[in-house]
Length: 410
Image (cartoon, rainbow, N blue to C red; front, side):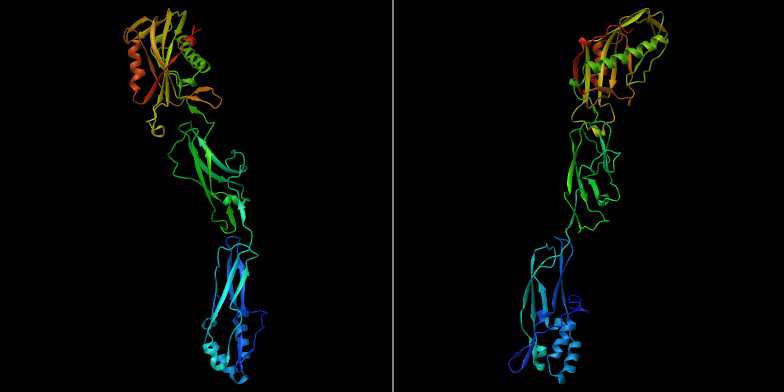
């Protein structure tokens, strides 16, 4: 037991309880040489038992007649104290300040009988744990450092994209002078390829990093959540498209058409706000052009379609429009025909609604709708082509926009 009962080199415990016990037999009290040491952090403390075997051997030798001392010394040199004694405690780890621990000792003095010396006295002692260091509690989810703006030192929860195709990343960028800079934050699961929507709650777990003593430092909480809210979102319902949103779309459409006519363009491909219309039109003494519409069709992805794995439009607003003009000619192959009375459709793709309710148009995807002659393609056929052909992936909602009807393009 020398590994458990370390020698006290400078011990002051030289006291010995020696008494007469029948036929001149002297005794030593082994508990006199037992010492306990409490170490570590409150809640995870340990108790170490030490035995002063130098003092034990010295005192037990002094208890026998001088003529037998040399023989006893040689015998003791061949034996460890554990050959005579067994010392144990009922609890030695995960200790708190104030805990009471019972240290007990069993002894066998058979080897010492010929020297007329033995053991007696107390066989147990109650020790009150004290002196353990208080743990340092770290608040990993303190709002001062968790999920803060990028211009502040802290744990940065980066969110990119548009709901429901938000992507997230998490990085600990707490100031190095703060021990929390060594905490390991992680989101449950592999979110590299997952996407999220406003309202989703992302679980976050934290653990003590390798640079910190996991006994000294403890976490106030090991789990937390980040709720995604207030991010731009793709339009999901007709209620999100109001007259203000429509006025912007209408203005964009008219600006592109007027620019086409003013430039005498043979072909138009608009590159703003995902509104695209292409047809060969020439400006021959155009006097004015009128636009009329009474319905629009909002296409939104069905719930069964995985937005995270979908690379098409998140939504489409398809608008049939009647264009009436005088003095405008359109080229159709080698033919030049009057532009007057044309029916067409145009599409706005990936409409986005901001937290303040305003609607903008994303310029990410290019979409072309073709002006169709009424003689070649009826409005019903145009809707079948641009709207209902996509009904397997999209929910189609008809919107009454007659009260938002345009007047002229000038």
